[in-house]
Length: 193
Image (cartoon, rainbow, N blue to C red; front, side):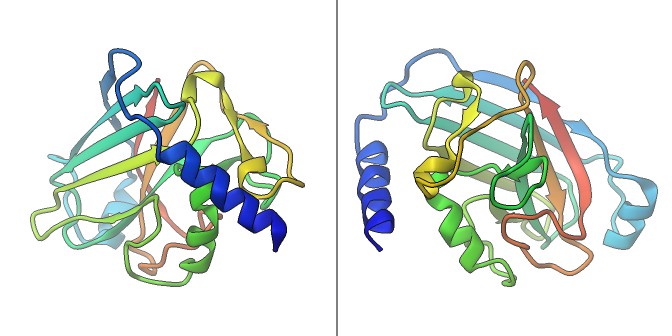
């Protein structure tokens, strides 16, 4: 209980400080990587689907990530993931939700839900458009996902360094978030920064 309270206080302190920009943002188009089979499962023609990502580190030690999706499958749940250079100390997977370590508990709590309440989850609108804004409670350029902010007994893990890889996945198979593991999914967009 004490660990969770200390973690909550630390997370609030990190996210409550100045959000002034620390540098110019990185903006890049994401590659469309969905297979024909997965596109068919989603019941959508992805030939016009596009996504861009914008990443900006802030002076307060956080990183702001904005992803814009256009012409993807309409009214579909998606989640955003960050490749690790090693295994998650929680799941053993080679990726973790693209979210702050302080948000992992909420993602776990909403694993089996269809609502886009997880910090790395979003729905496209009826035209297949969406904008998702994610705040990482660490500097992406430091190259480490701070799992210790979630639970101080966990070790931090290097992010798939140089380049950092973000992946947007569609949840057409079951429309569930699946928490800290990708579960059944359709990789849709990917970018390495």
